[in-house]
Image (cartoon, rainbow, N blue to C red; front, side, top):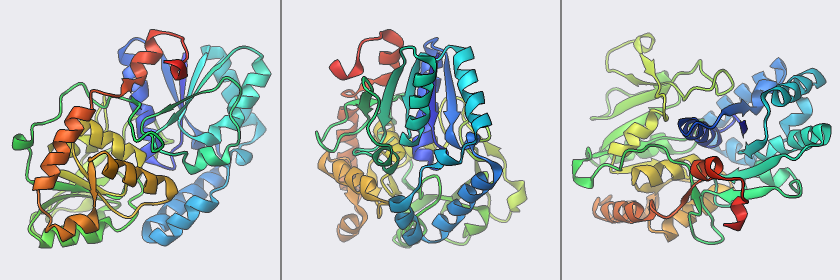
Length: 362
């Protein structure tokens, strides 16, 4: 059994974990997803939800929150911790893939409790260590690390397949831009969507709440995540619905993919994604071969992600693209570069299902 350890505070961490679990199960490997917030008491979980709303409303607060984020594990009571450890023992967990560094203290205690060998793999979705890993301290001896993107090496060493379908040819794509603010809807994306619509671009805009849609703005299509869903409620992909003009928000039908997240289907058909550079967005960009137009990052790790995507020829900063007149020509060149790059990274699911050799030694 492989335990995939994610956190619901960022879909850019959680969704890659869901994708890894899906790819492992397709290969016949048992995999269970654990979301850290499921272990929190109700008051702490309510505080997480409240923080999400604050961060959405004020990007400056969100960026400050990255720097002062505290370890939530201290809030987990003994009973919840004991139940988790019993579940891991009963299911025979032998390998853990850690997507959030805040899990490491629990992993350390579980290892000490059982006294048996446990394979621990840290999976970094960002190109440098994210805040949770930086705050976690030194990993256990023998811990392996894999990077889906590496700023140090200007490379994409590993990947998690989003789909088995090849990227859509540039000529078959809709002349649209997908604009979003990550799972928590943070940053300047709505203002940028308005500017791009005024410049004549067709937009697919993922809003944080249905009430934020502006049905009067050109040929913009609006989408929203189901506001009642949270990553700690189930192991499914985020439910996404389209907001139709003139229809009540209560009429939205939310659907979700069974093999990958629904927003990826929008990125596959777009000429570019306009977004802050989270790790999950980088993964979508690679597998869709869709360039990134990079908005203001949320934290140092996203700044490094943005620079990496520019260095690799996969993205352009919004201000630079604006100075170029929002031309599609450089985007097509980036699409070609992404097509070539997709064959390079090693498949983490294939490696985990194929052998027990150290991932770091290959």
